[in-house]
Amino acid sequence: MDETYIFGHKSPDTDSITSSLVMAYLEKELGNENVVSCRLGNLNKETEFVLDYFDIEAPKLIEKVEDGANVILVDHNSPSESVENIENAQILKVVDHHKIAFETAYPLFVRCEPVGCTETIMIKLFEENGIEIPKEIASLILSAIISDTLLLKSPTTTDDDKKAVEKLAAIAELDYEVYGLDMLKAGTDLSSFSIEEILALDAKQIDFKDVKSIVNQVNTASIEEVMAMKEDLEAGINAIIEKEGLDLFMLLITDIVNSNSQIIALGNDAALVEKAYGVKLENNTVLLEGVVSRKKQVVPIMTENA
Ligand code: MN
Ligand code: MN
Image (cartoon, rainbow, N blue to C red; front, side, top):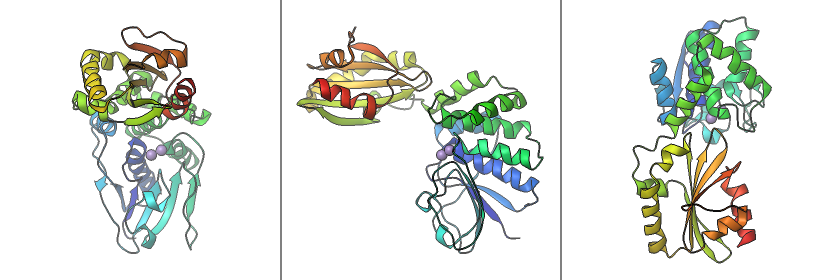
């Protein structure tokens, strides 16, 4: 049989990369020897951490497939997120946890479930086929579930994901909370960015009625680590306020593990944050518990109170 290419979506995350490795292992165990684990883009910092940690080689980088190529899609099924020329490939299997967004003119193996991570489904495939999960594979699957569910804290987490993590942590002999936090933290590493770059990473110009504002959000696993740069951040924010003629600059430092945001608010209308959330800024900063979404938990409340 010809080679079978296994890959996740473009701009790959940890689930997409490790899914292609885990699925390749599973396929070989099932007798499909001629499989190639692939990726459709560069590794992000979190995935780099995972592969370095377990000393595992990254999947092969590809951009397109030939007409008639055999492929297995993992962690995606939408053609727009897939490899170039997917419409002329032969899709053998799909294992995924996203909504169905493809169609074929031929029958194929499809396994999709609404769980937190593609690899939570793959564990079931191992079990159903009586295949043991080796330590290295368990470590990869564990990493992916932690990544997709933000250490089982995201609202997408299911009981299947929780059970899987317990089981895998035992096989991998890992304290998953300690390892998981290190892994998520690697993905939020700001050390290669300047203050100006951090303040622009995810900045959105949003006017709360006539309060001209910029709201920027930075994800972190350690608020303290970002707050260690507070003085430099404030100097950078004040420069932006002056340059752009802003009434308010709001920086959300979002703790993706504990689901809180530390706010740094500067500008003549910084008190709007106090009014909106019923809090008091101390040295321009305050912790807003449970606030993680700019779209749902910042914009409407700030607009309402402006
Ligand atoms: Mn993904
Ligand atoms: Mn996923």
